Image (cartoon, rainbow, N blue to C red; front, side, top):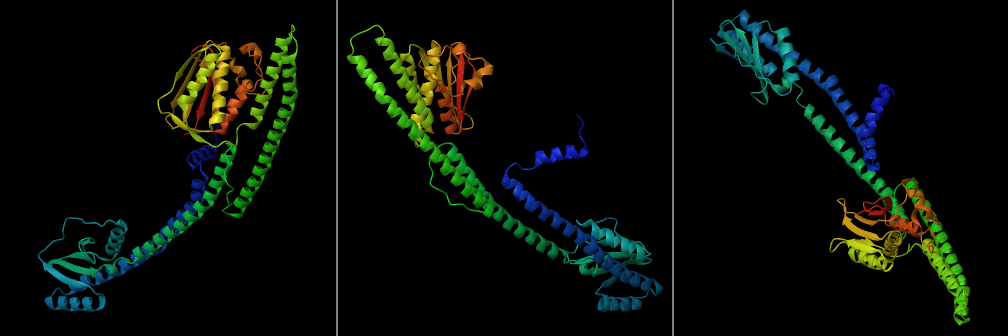
Length: 447
């Protein structure tokens, strides 16, 4: 597959652009400001500062050329005194002759090379004699020396005669304006992004089944509209859940009444051959009603509490031992997590009971993940499930009889309820082949 240069550049930028809305919004605002300020600064230095500096240097070089030529025309002390007086009065130049001297051999250049290059170019164009200059020795002056037949003509000029010295003020104001604009942009973006983050937090909490007070929409008009729409949707979903739970609870209550009468009639009836089978059917029907109601309710309204995970696993192990399995429980001492205890206990009991029903040995382990989350594994040595049926195993009312020889009392909701509970805590359940030979159910919860 061939990529065009534009596609390669696009892929490169996509990997480098921040993934968060905060980072991208900041980039959208800050990047143009920095580009604009950089362009303005470059234009200022190229079109103004360099041009002004070049003209100042050219004017200074012309004055120095005048002083040097005037002295060579009449190299007498009297003429030198006249040149010195005129240069000081009209050009702000200090001129002195150092007799029997030569130009220094050491070249001293400033940090801003453009100043030295501009001045050197101007002197080279105007002054015929060898020259030397230094822009670093005196902060406010420029030292220029011209070789004369009987010595060195030294000229000290104010620095503003050679370079535009007020450029740093423009740059300083430009930097202050940039910082001010970026600060305002950052505060504005942060306020807008925070409103979206609060909406995401409310949506995530609702997805976990947590009951939170209604939050007040903040931010831009579009964000407030999205928050209002979410709140209306959340209320509709909650009403639907409440209605479904109430309906199933009512159906469960109505079904339990005839089942109770049947159980009473069987207890009072004379013994007969199918009595035990009928009692078993009644027990299975009651178990199915409990499973349906638990799946529909999901214990979503339960508040999270700090739970001893090890104690919960040991209790689930005791229940699994009653089925006849050999159970091993491994959990660090003092391992706790914020969980909805009734719902999570039901999920663990479902997984442990399922493992005990299909295997002779069951292992329950818990550990803390490096990220701070919680991991619980339930392993067994049963027949397991083919990998291509892992997803189907979580489907409500799915019974994988061929692979698991499922208990006749099951209705195919054990794994579905367990996954619903795990996802309600912000995590998930995955299935894998266990090192014990059977199935491994792995619960991972975030920190």
